[in-house]
Length: 221
Image (cartoon, rainbow, N blue to C red; front, side, top):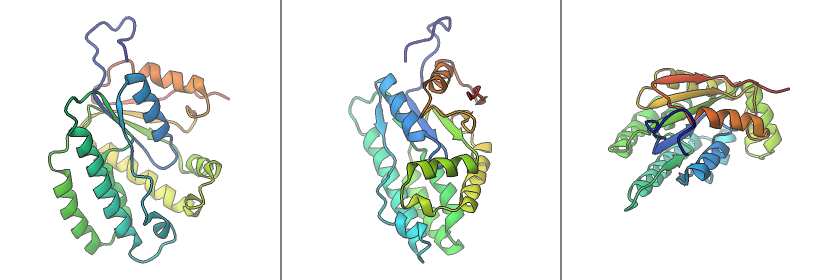
């Protein structure tokens, strides 16, 4: 992204940016748009986890298998991106550390002990992003977006589980300090469907983010 008018040459866009948030909050869409604007490589999150369907059906052991698969795939994709000889800007539609959000929600104590050993190995030497964009939305809004997406597996996600996920994300990012963090509440806007909402967010991202900052865009009727 070019420096915004009036901000001067001192503003340097982040070179490694991650977009996070619960399911159907719009993180993949935003990551794609930002990668296009920044001429950046995009690191995709794993969307073909073969154990996810069984997890949504609450089959025994499926949560642990799904979690380990996500853990391995996410670190593999990040490490491959780092191995590029001439690295440029990078946009990821996931934050590696958030893997623990779901591990603590879905695994029992014995599974967690084993999971944490793998996490420590895989997380070693992975750099933190320059900027994380955390997209928030209420469970009710997320449920509406899941219904609109009409993915058969996602239809099995209960409102109660969504509420747990939203609370877990809020707790995680309340304590997060490894990167600059921009928190964006998307409950009243829809930058996937409304270009005006998207433009508000893109304008904010042309300004520096220091520490944890909040962006509350004006919704439209």
